[in-house]
Amino acid sequence: MARMTIDGRRARGETSRRAIMNRAVHIASVDGLGGLSIGGLATEASMSKGGIVALFGTKEQLQLATIAAAADIFRESVVLPGLAVEGGLTRLRALTDAWLAYSENRVFAGGCFFAAANAEFGSRQGPVRDAIAASMTEWQEFLHGTIERAVARGELPAHTDAGQLTFEITSVLDGANSTSLLFGSSEPYARARVAIEKLLAQSS
Amino acid sequence: MARMTIDGRRARGETSRRAIMNRAVHIASVDGLGGLSIGGLATEASMSKGGIVALFGTKEQLQLATIAAAADIFRESVVLPGLAVEGGLTRLRALTDAWLAYSENRVFAGGCFFAAANAEFGSRQGPVRDAIAASMTEWQEFLHGTIERAVARGELPAHTDAGQLTFEITSVLDGANSTSLLFGSSEPYARARVAIEKLLAQSS
Image (cartoon, rainbow over all chains, first blue to last red; front, side, top):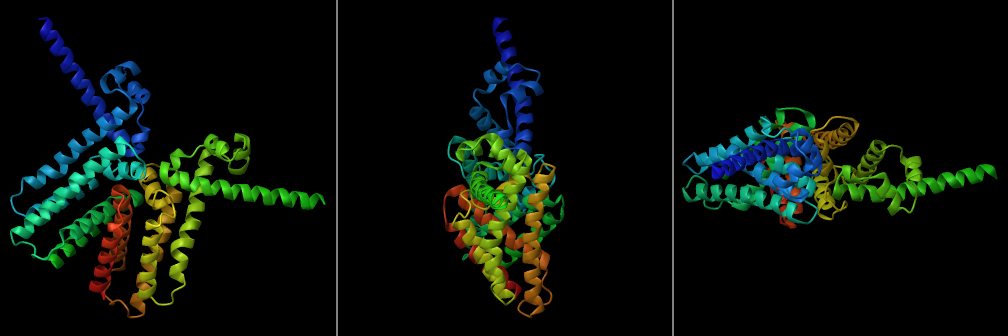
């Protein structure tokens, strides 16, 4: 009975934690990771500041937990739909389509979470910046590996420069995200689709 | 005599204002426009908070003055070297070269000022966001006009989609800036030069 109560408390703690994290990622995608505050989240969740600190620790730990939660959402929205596709070039197209949908559908209210976080922390130092860099490196390496997979399967030519193509594709994706946010327009997504088709056509 | 004293005060005010603005643009390029504070600038300039308020007004007015000062630095670093070149395609190349040098040489400590400011304010509302959008629109329209100039001079083919090419070039420039900041590497600038050469070669 005591055990069940403890488990029940743990489960409730986990549910609160998830609900608060869900708010935190959306606040951070609009106001930046610097815009997250223990006080602000406490007010939104009708909890004491002490309750938020018990769940997340310091503000830096809260920022790191938020980045981890955002990375989970990114994997679900972009990486998993790509992994569901068997081929190399077809997987690459599935990934870029999923990425553009993830940005255009505003899975995060402020567009791509990592683009915003990178612009905010990219020129600073410390564990928050390192966590953002690790997530972005993971994504770029996955894209790079998918291009190599397409080359290995003969779907892209053997002389393809995977690093160069990764740079060009991520630039186009990020460009669509930032231009769309700036001008409140969906046209950049159409331009990005044209640009990526050209990149893949000239590669193949 | 009274007149001279007033002019002298005005000149000193202008000198202080410029020196403080110079610090403000560099602070904002690393810590964001949200990182600017009247108190912080007062401490750095050994002035009273009241002195800073007298020179700049509210925090929002300080942010707007900082954006205007950054736009002047951008024009000097990128637009003027482009305007110094007569041709269309040669001017376009001069502009992209100057942009990459502006980012790579860290004219602003945190890389491109407007990329950082856009990521910070792009998904908010208000005069600060509007001022950033106006500066970025001005740049994109200048690039667009330069592409049309190259088309009009027969240096790019008549069927060139200037809007598409503007999107692709700005994506590559911004991609070099953000990737270089993230990985502390200059390789993205080399990749950007290759990507832009490909874009112009396939257009012409």
